[in-house]
Length: 260
Image (cartoon, rainbow, N blue to C red; front, top):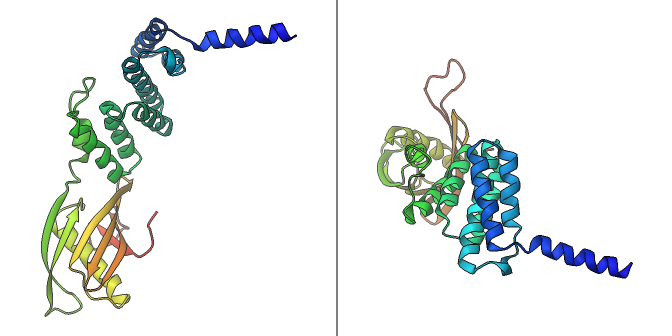
């Protein structure tokens, strides 16, 4: 029994000790199968690549090829509709190679699909910093186009308080607020009501720290607002499909609790 056991262990070691040629063969086969639409077969080949023993491969080759294999697993998983598994594998690619720009870019795409706009902007900017703004397999910068409505900017809006018409304040806003000035003014009105209920004066500074799309008609922002000697976090919800009979095209709600 002892001899059989030892032979078994040696066989296992050989199975995982793939050479550079073995890894490259599986990688190229995975690409070919993926291009042919044979997703499951392609995943099996890429799985062989990422299972290779790092100690058997040159460092630069390992970093480049393993990160590419993880990326392709993520891409195939995403095409199957499993965005979570796709993102997990993009992250694995980045753990091997933090400068893997395609993983950064496609992570941004998945975050957009999940409605996590702040994270999408972060990963898109990282890809852009590496010079990656367009994938060769796509006709345009599709992630940048989807994020174009969420433009980071600094705004100064002169606002007259609805509670005290004689009082006006310049509100400085940073970040990626949704919409034009009028929509932001309406958001400020909603915030002012919550602050007045809380016994706080109108704020003069705000940073939109987080943006999430819950669905196609509802956007949610996290505002960090500041006044004299106080600071507060509020959530602003924009509903562009309000109930029938609502007098405005967009209904804006503000809450002290996170809106899910």
